[in-house]
Image 1 (cartoon, chains in turn brown, orange):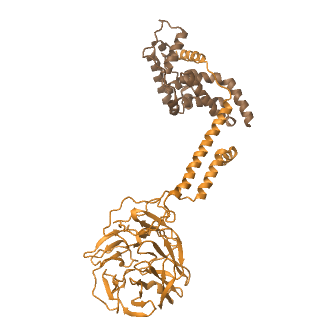
Image 2: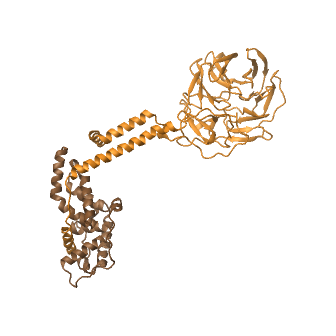
Image 3: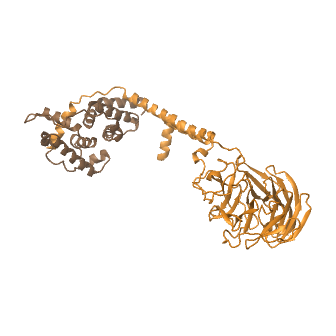
Length: 174
Length: 422
């Protein structure tokens, strides 16, 4: 594959897959600007190796997840917005829109690794072992991070307890 | 219920609404080219620094100005990564030694050169030479500027290598193998044999007194033909360089500059080193197996009363070495290397000035312009680190290779494929 072919293939990939990848990036960062930075960095990394990448989607996803928990990237991350300790007051029976806002806010209060684990486990629907492989960490780490993340969500807003009340799904080999 | 969490997360993500700019591919490539260019520039600067820095360093040093240095009380084994003398010369050496663990039969035996300020340097001799209890292979000039080394060829091909410590340059003196320095270091006595003097054949020859560093012959005295002549020969020049004492086996002969014999004497000891003549030129010292100094009258060769030596001092050193070797004088007191291990001031009682590592089998010490009291040594200075010792052309070659690999795609891929074995 020469450079022109690689460029055409890359642009086709970006046009087709960037929306889905952008959603992951947003969930991983919690901020639109950080998510754009993260996704662009991942795509740029992939671009220079495009001709040699066998599975571009998997490659870019892996960069998204590893970079989202990179300490180096954490140094460049925008400071979080000032948030009050008190969760927003909601109606007794929250709507899905309310829950979305609450979850969006609560996800931002998790650590990058906790966010990454939740995204992989519940958004990407990966098993614990697959999540561990994606993040290059031990399965035990995934379990503990998931447990801590869900507990934190419950702490942050009682309404989220309805979403995370049950235990995380057990390891399923997919 | 965590499936509900997934569903709400999808809703959160669906509402993110992000923009991805176009032209990412070209931008990524440009950024990568800029990074590589910056890396190449930094690498070039670092390597250029490696070339330029040695130029900034004060080497080779100029010959030392007259002054005194203090001997260290202890010599160390050469530290790891000790610089070669050729790469980092010193104004002069205070001591010079070869150790048994550096000695490999049939290979060149490296030397350790110790300068002022605890500077240590390594010197690989151009060829292997041997020592005996009569013959030294390394002779440091009294001022520490030069080292004479034997260069034994086949048959009668015996020469000397003269190493200039201040530059690292080596010249060959054709007049013969080194025997002795004069006490002022201006001349040296070299011996040439007419045949293979290491064999049991009867071989004669002559000793030539040469000017240093030119190697110009000044005067000569003949050797008495003897079997194995090189094994039992030693010599010492008088302080003014006008007389030469030559010992072959148990006979000492004193020669004038014109080659005439002043006297001959049968002796029981051995000429006591390069400073065997007392500074006033009136006595010639021999040392014996007991560590005593046995003077002869320099005018007649007659035996004189024994001088204080190192009697009673526990014997140290190697079997091959002469027991007491006077290498200099401090007033009327001799400075002597004993057992190739320690430098003594032969006062009453004898005082140790310097101790060499246990493994040393040849030791010489420069005694000119040495302060009266030795000092406790500091940390050994091994000289500049290895990268700065690479020749400039090698560094330039590395720089070009790195720049080519970083700036061009094909060579990089070629290297990668080669590493993968494809």
